[in-house]
Image (cartoon, rainbow, N blue to C red):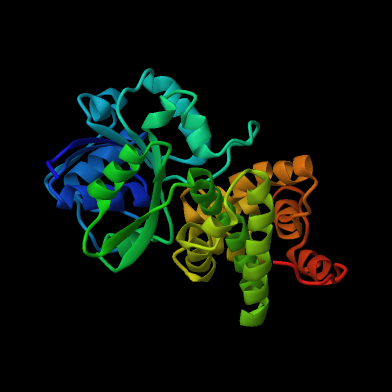
Length: 329
């Protein structure tokens, strides 16, 4: 594949890891950071302050100018927060090149999946997504990783695969773009619940139950959103759920654990110092459940802890006291 110019939106840990991967492949990457101080620091140090190990190659530049990042780009890659996607694309104006999403969430208010949000600003046939079990601190160290790519147009799905695939970054195409986006969004909510459980000393049995029943919630609501259930059994569903619920590097897991240890939700956010997408997404997921008449007990309890001040111990008791029904998968 010939080298491309990539406009990269977002300089968090995930944006840094993927932009470094693209740069290592010889692509010219210009990364936009909202914070000018961070852009200057990254341009000078070539390392991210929230990652241990990994450096940006000379093919990657950092800027605080959104226009500079996308000027002359052959493709745009997005790694901003879920809540920031709409404002960023409103600023960008008309886009005529492929846009590859890597953020994971459901927009509050509209309850749209992120590809649906971006399709309001970009021709639908240009929108694609990259998702799956992929912690930034492992990707930046070139540890083996397998993810999924999808798009509304097969040509964009092929482009994503060609841009990102490496011997250590394996990519599986999947035509179900809604399912790929949905799994990556919902797993963050379950990871918060698992962090809370671990922080309360619940043990691995409890976490296994939360993950399994969490996947059940994902499948029920995903079907209502038109996602293929099989997609949620794959890397962008169960795979991403597993790594996010079990890894100490997961922000959503750590957020839940900090709450269980006595931090307020806002205090936990500040201690982590980066976006906690599950806290944002559970608002929209809860509304979607209500809209479709689908019970989402783990999502509901997680929401109540974050936004209604429910004591985590009471939340665990509430889950355990639910009526037992026959298991349906």
